[in-house]
Length: 207
Image (cartoon, rainbow, N blue to C red; front, side):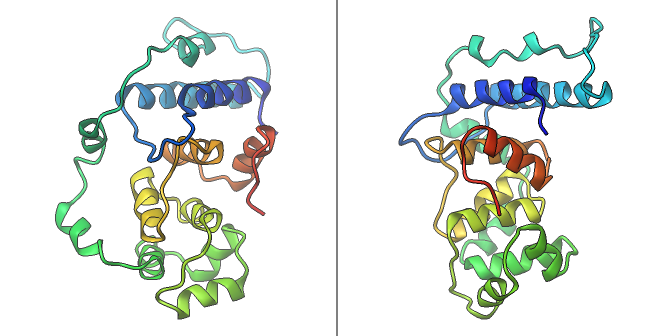
Protein backbone atom coordinates (compact mmCIF):
# COMPACT_ATOMS: atom_id res chain seq x y z
CA UNK A 1 0.00 0.00 0.00
CA UNK A 2 1.45 3.37 -1.02
CA UNK A 3 1.99 5.81 1.84
CA UNK A 4 -0.34 8.77 2.29
CA UNK A 5 2.56 11.17 1.80
CA UNK A 6 3.55 9.54 -1.49
CA UNK A 7 -0.02 9.67 -2.80
CA UNK A 8 -0.24 13.34 -1.84
CA UNK A 9 2.95 14.11 -3.76
CA UNK A 10 1.72 12.25 -6.85
CA UNK A 11 -1.51 14.21 -6.55
CA UNK A 12 0.43 17.49 -6.55
CA UNK A 13 2.35 16.27 -9.57
CA UNK A 14 -0.91 15.55 -11.40
CA UNK A 15 -2.29 18.96 -10.48
CA UNK A 16 0.86 20.63 -11.80
CA UNK A 17 1.05 18.83 -15.14
CA UNK A 18 -2.56 17.89 -15.89
CA UNK A 19 -3.54 19.89 -18.95
CA UNK A 20 -6.78 18.84 -20.72
CA UNK A 21 -6.51 18.41 -24.46
CA UNK A 22 -2.72 18.68 -24.44
CA UNK A 23 -0.76 15.77 -25.90
CA UNK A 24 2.81 14.51 -25.66
CA UNK A 25 4.36 14.56 -22.20
CA UNK A 26 7.78 16.17 -22.46
CA UNK A 27 10.25 16.21 -19.59
CA UNK A 28 12.07 19.45 -18.90
CA UNK A 29 14.75 20.04 -16.27
CA UNK A 30 12.22 21.25 -13.70
CA UNK A 31 10.09 18.12 -14.05
CA UNK A 32 13.16 15.88 -13.86
CA UNK A 33 14.17 17.62 -10.63
CA UNK A 34 10.76 16.97 -9.09
CA UNK A 35 10.94 13.32 -10.17
CA UNK A 36 14.30 12.96 -8.42
CA UNK A 37 13.05 14.51 -5.19
CA UNK A 38 9.90 12.39 -5.09
CA UNK A 39 12.05 9.30 -5.58
CA UNK A 40 14.34 10.36 -2.75
CA UNK A 41 11.37 10.84 -0.46
CA UNK A 42 9.95 7.43 -1.37
CA UNK A 43 13.27 5.75 -0.64
CA UNK A 44 13.51 7.53 2.69
CA UNK A 45 10.03 6.36 3.61
CA UNK A 46 10.87 2.79 2.65
CA UNK A 47 14.00 2.81 4.81
CA UNK A 48 12.11 4.03 7.85
CA UNK A 49 9.27 1.51 7.31
CA UNK A 50 6.61 4.21 7.48
CA UNK A 51 8.01 5.57 10.74
CA UNK A 52 8.22 9.38 11.10
CA UNK A 53 11.26 10.42 9.10
CA UNK A 54 14.05 12.50 10.60
CA UNK A 55 15.79 14.54 7.91
CA UNK A 56 19.30 15.85 8.02
CA UNK A 57 20.23 19.10 6.34
CA UNK A 58 21.43 17.39 3.16
CA UNK A 59 18.52 14.99 2.85
CA UNK A 60 15.33 15.32 0.87
CA UNK A 61 12.34 16.50 2.88
CA UNK A 62 8.74 16.70 1.68
CA UNK A 63 8.77 20.50 1.55
CA UNK A 64 11.61 20.42 -0.98
CA UNK A 65 9.35 19.12 -3.71
CA UNK A 66 6.12 21.03 -3.19
CA UNK A 67 5.15 21.21 -6.85
CA UNK A 68 2.40 23.65 -5.97
CA UNK A 69 5.06 26.29 -5.45
CA UNK A 70 6.80 25.63 -8.75
CA UNK A 71 6.77 28.31 -11.38
CA UNK A 72 4.80 27.70 -14.56
CA UNK A 73 7.16 27.06 -17.45
CA UNK A 74 6.50 26.63 -21.14
CA UNK A 75 7.94 23.32 -22.33
CA UNK A 76 9.51 23.90 -25.71
CA UNK A 77 10.46 21.65 -28.56
CA UNK A 78 14.12 22.34 -27.78
CA UNK A 79 13.70 21.06 -24.22
CA UNK A 80 12.19 17.83 -25.48
CA UNK A 81 15.05 17.38 -27.91
CA UNK A 82 17.60 17.94 -25.13
CA UNK A 83 16.25 15.01 -23.12
CA UNK A 84 16.77 12.68 -26.09
CA UNK A 85 20.11 14.13 -27.23
CA UNK A 86 22.07 10.98 -26.37
CA UNK A 87 19.88 8.71 -28.48
CA UNK A 88 21.50 7.32 -31.63
CA UNK A 89 20.00 9.06 -34.65
CA UNK A 90 20.85 6.22 -37.03
CA UNK A 91 19.06 3.71 -34.81
CA UNK A 92 16.02 5.95 -34.56
CA UNK A 93 15.83 6.41 -38.33
CA UNK A 94 16.07 2.67 -38.96
CA UNK A 95 13.21 2.02 -36.55
CA UNK A 96 10.79 4.64 -37.84
CA UNK A 97 8.97 2.26 -40.18
CA UNK A 98 8.50 -0.53 -37.63
CA UNK A 99 4.97 -1.60 -36.82
CA UNK A 100 3.96 -2.03 -33.20
CA UNK A 101 4.35 -5.80 -33.43
CA UNK A 102 7.82 -5.56 -34.94
CA UNK A 103 9.00 -3.05 -32.38
CA UNK A 104 7.56 -4.99 -29.46
CA UNK A 105 9.23 -8.23 -30.52
CA UNK A 106 12.54 -6.45 -31.13
CA UNK A 107 12.42 -4.89 -27.67
CA UNK A 108 11.71 -8.25 -26.07
CA UNK A 109 14.85 -9.65 -27.73
CA UNK A 110 16.95 -6.61 -26.83
CA UNK A 111 15.90 -6.82 -23.19
CA UNK A 112 16.81 -10.51 -23.09
CA UNK A 113 13.34 -11.51 -21.97
CA UNK A 114 11.04 -14.31 -23.05
CA UNK A 115 7.58 -13.76 -24.51
CA UNK A 116 5.95 -15.35 -21.48
CA UNK A 117 7.87 -13.14 -19.05
CA UNK A 118 6.66 -10.05 -20.85
CA UNK A 119 2.99 -10.87 -21.40
CA UNK A 120 2.68 -12.29 -17.88
CA UNK A 121 4.08 -9.15 -16.25
CA UNK A 122 1.90 -7.02 -18.54
CA UNK A 123 -1.19 -9.03 -17.51
CA UNK A 124 -1.85 -9.79 -21.18
CA UNK A 125 -3.51 -13.07 -22.13
CA UNK A 126 -1.30 -15.53 -24.01
CA UNK A 127 -3.81 -15.76 -26.88
CA UNK A 128 -3.88 -11.98 -27.16
CA UNK A 129 -0.09 -11.89 -27.31
CA UNK A 130 -0.15 -14.62 -29.96
CA UNK A 131 -2.30 -12.35 -32.16
CA UNK A 132 0.25 -9.58 -31.78
CA UNK A 133 3.11 -11.90 -32.70
CA UNK A 134 1.41 -13.45 -35.71
CA UNK A 135 -0.07 -10.28 -37.24
CA UNK A 136 2.64 -7.73 -38.05
CA UNK A 137 0.00 -5.01 -38.42
CA UNK A 138 -1.98 -5.83 -35.28
CA UNK A 139 -2.48 -2.90 -32.89
CA UNK A 140 -3.83 -3.40 -29.35
CA UNK A 141 -5.50 -0.67 -27.32
CA UNK A 142 -3.50 2.01 -25.56
CA UNK A 143 -3.84 0.45 -22.11
CA UNK A 144 -2.23 -2.76 -23.38
CA UNK A 145 0.64 -0.82 -24.95
CA UNK A 146 1.21 1.02 -21.66
CA UNK A 147 1.28 -2.33 -19.85
CA UNK A 148 4.01 -3.53 -22.20
CA UNK A 149 6.10 -0.40 -21.53
CA UNK A 150 6.09 -1.35 -17.85
CA UNK A 151 6.65 -5.07 -18.42
CA UNK A 152 9.64 -4.33 -20.67
CA UNK A 153 11.00 -1.80 -18.17
CA UNK A 154 11.37 0.85 -20.86
CA UNK A 155 12.75 4.33 -20.49
CA UNK A 156 10.30 7.16 -21.04
CA UNK A 157 11.71 7.78 -24.53
CA UNK A 158 11.45 4.09 -25.43
CA UNK A 159 7.87 4.04 -24.15
CA UNK A 160 6.98 7.04 -26.32
CA UNK A 161 8.43 5.26 -29.35
CA UNK A 162 6.47 2.07 -28.66
CA UNK A 163 3.27 4.04 -28.18
CA UNK A 164 3.88 6.00 -31.36
CA UNK A 165 4.33 2.79 -33.35
CA UNK A 166 0.78 1.88 -32.28
CA UNK A 167 -0.60 5.33 -33.08
CA UNK A 168 -0.70 6.63 -29.50
CA UNK A 169 1.06 9.27 -27.42
CA UNK A 170 1.40 10.06 -23.74
CA UNK A 171 -1.06 12.85 -23.02
CA UNK A 172 -1.19 15.50 -20.34
CA UNK A 173 -4.96 15.29 -20.57
CA UNK A 174 -4.78 11.77 -19.09
CA UNK A 175 -4.00 11.30 -15.40
CA UNK A 176 -3.21 7.65 -16.13
CA UNK A 177 -0.57 8.73 -18.65
CA UNK A 178 0.95 11.21 -16.21
CA UNK A 179 1.21 8.60 -13.45
CA UNK A 180 2.69 5.99 -15.79
CA UNK A 181 5.17 8.59 -17.10
CA UNK A 182 6.29 9.27 -13.54
CA UNK A 183 7.00 5.59 -12.88
CA UNK A 184 8.76 5.09 -16.23
CA UNK A 185 10.91 8.18 -15.76
CA UNK A 186 11.94 6.93 -12.34
CA UNK A 187 12.51 3.35 -13.52
CA UNK A 188 9.95 1.93 -11.11
CA UNK A 189 8.34 -1.05 -12.81
CA UNK A 190 6.39 -2.63 -9.95
CA UNK A 191 2.93 -3.22 -11.44
CA UNK A 192 1.39 -3.63 -7.98
CA UNK A 193 2.64 -0.23 -6.84
CA UNK A 194 1.58 1.42 -10.10
CA UNK A 195 -1.90 -0.10 -9.76
CA UNK A 196 -2.04 1.06 -6.15
CA UNK A 197 -1.42 4.67 -7.15
CA UNK A 198 -3.74 4.50 -10.17
CA UNK A 199 -6.52 3.13 -7.97
CA UNK A 200 -5.93 5.80 -5.33
CA UNK A 201 -6.54 8.47 -7.98
CA UNK A 202 -9.60 6.83 -9.49
CA UNK A 203 -7.86 5.64 -12.64
CA UNK A 204 -8.29 2.23 -14.32
CA UNK A 205 -5.71 -0.28 -13.12
CA UNK A 206 -3.77 -2.81 -15.19
CA UNK A 207 -5.60 -6.11 -14.66
